[in-house]
Length: 258
Image (cartoon, rainbow, N blue to C red):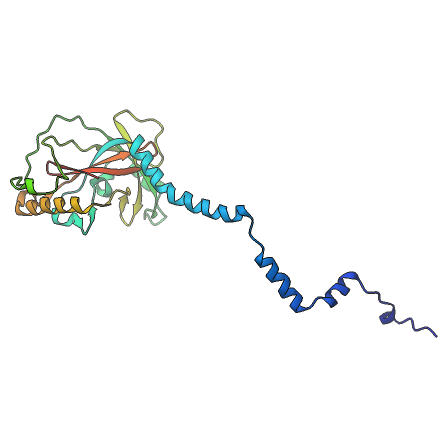
């Protein structure tokens, strides 16, 4: 009598036979062989190209701004000159960094309304564009508060210049990059951070030779009470997108190139 139970009649599939023959050791060997296979060339090069692009992106932007940007003169707030140099870094506090200065300009209220929360607080990181206009220079002569009797034995890194340029004047605020501006105007891009506007121009590192010269000039200024609190002029280059880099500054009538 033939036994026709389901267990006896069940046929084996190829997949089942293969799984019965494959051991865990075989799995480990196959995994190791796959791991030892060389990666395709593009998988090695692609991450490297991304990193190189990120590294070169910042300096290339600075080079473009330096080459194609327009020279603009910014003015810092009057400050104790002893606070200007911290270690090897210059710290600038511009008058256009303060909302108290900008709130009087056309476009400020619209910008605040577009970039504020319901509680009235301005959103951190909000972008704005300050429209700056060149002021006609009248060859203003600047009387230096610094004593230059001892310049012969100091590093020649600051150029004496009795004609100091005028700072550009802020004339309006815009939430978007303006399409059209006069030839004597530029749009400087800034971001709202912790109650002030940051333009990426607030800190600049100087060489050792410049630091020594600046230290000397600041020492001279500290001896002069009239010059102890004063504004510093900074020349920057501004490109068509509102990005800027510092190129030089004036302490008294001495110009320092960066």
